[in-house]
Amino acid sequence: MGTAAAQNVFGVSAHFRGNSRNFTSKVDFSSVNFPCNWEFSRMTLFPSSASTSTSKSFGGRICCLPDAGDCFSDKIPTPILDTIENPMHLKNLSPKELKQLANDIRSELSYTMSKTQKPYKASLSVVELTVAIHHVFHAPVDKILWDVGEQTYAHKILTGRRSLMHTLRQTNGLSGYTSRSESEFDPFGAAHGCNSISAGLGMAVARDIKGKRDRVVAVISNETTMAGQLYEAMNNAGYLDSNMVVILNDSRHSLHPKLEEASTTPINALSSNLSKLQSSKFFRKLREVAKGFTKRIGKGMHEWAAKVDEYARGMVGPPGSTLFEELGLYYIGPVDGHNIEDLVCVLHEVASLDSMGPVLVHVITKVDQEVEDASHSDMPDEHQEGLCNSDSLPCNTRPQTYSDCFVDALIMEAKKDKDIVTVHAGMGMEPSLQLYQEKFPDRFFNVGMAEQHAVTFSAGLSCGGLKPFCIIPSALLQRAYDQVIHDVDCQKIPVRFVITSAGLVGSDGPAHCGAFDITFMSCLPNMIVMAPSDEVELVHMVATAALVNDRPVCLRYPRGAIVKMNNLLCNGVPLEVTVLCFLCLYHVFVML
Image (cartoon, rainbow, N blue to C red; front, side, top):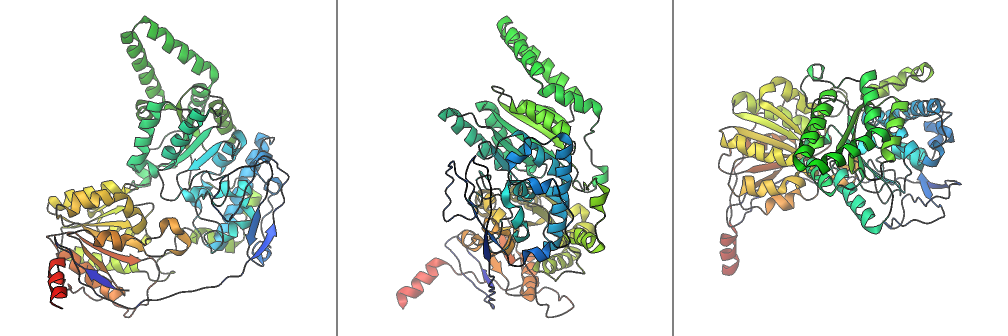
């Protein structure tokens, strides 16, 4: 469908319509029983309701695709992983066996995900961390929450969903994120990121009110640290002082234009020993005794001692570590995220905290961490090819998409108008946008998962005389709707919103379905809403948006391939936008 609409103070309407396309598919599934002798709680995959009740019995029904064995006929052996049916089986493993288990999981993920062509590198970086968490804590009684869905694949494998990993992001298959309706080991849904601390804090407070003793663990990443909700939750956690563990998976700053020049946190024997000391019971008790002693002496002495403690810990800790202390979280780290022994040691100490309040464990990981065992790394060439192409396919080997067409059109407009700048918000960045970033590095701003900031930042750029194109996926724009209304539309500031992944998004699931943007953008009094029916209209709408200087504009396009009509991209021709107010339409209807 292709539509365009414009509004004024009274209302709006003006439409372009194109063709609609329907895609249907039918997949047959068979069911198998999943045996398990663990009588700790009940886990249900794909239940009829979203109930999260627990019982002494275990029951589950797993739906598998037919001929699944063909997919794994040449799979690399995973002897330790084959003995794991649920997290309870990790409890008695030795550090050497835990390390081998991590290698088995990494091999399993690399093989399975390369076959399905799904992104998985984020999960590879947290394999050892996931193993250590499930070795120390007792899920599902202990609540383990994740901010980023793509980091949960190892978690899914260890919680009884290994046989279904090849169905990830498929119809009736596993969700790409944690899902409460999928498993009791997923206490909260992870989809948009930055929500785990807020949800975990709510669970921790509810636990305290009800007098329970379960632990709450929230795993965040350096990508989600761009979002303001994360710091709001940390600040509130420090104020409420409820016991919970926040684990920061730091795989380097994802927004730095040149990662090789980005600052890194060193991991060495000194930092490892300091992390163990910070988390030890002796150090914590000594610190609590010192606090109590200085409080008895007087408020001034207590504040002075707190400052000394903060400065001392800041000197031995990495840059920025005191920020978490200021927010009220006890900082521990940095810890090598690929050293099983260090992780288990620190997490064991942290799990023993009874009245310590919120704790943040800073874990350093590598996205490109590989399997250490040489026998596992000798994969066939076809598997290695899958690894190279799993996260993003090169532009010359994948179908042309609407995003490619948009970027080409935007580059043409940017060459003609030096005031055009681009602001990108959301998790990750489409490969096509990297082309614009390479051509105009000074006119491209990637703010990460900070959609609210992106909208208001774009408004400021517009007020400064520039022409910002604010690119946000449809499902993530919902987060910034307040800023769209108050900071842009009500002030009639010409920000050009580019809404990507609009409509149904297939394997990304309902959490990222962009079904609401037309409705919530069309109801705004000053917003021009455009939706192309093909790539030609998209080019024309980019040219139209570049010329609108008296009100905000948004254009939305779906994710997926296009049928190119011409090999050469045509120059955009501005469209005529007809503004019709509701008052005029009312008079027409009255006359009829």
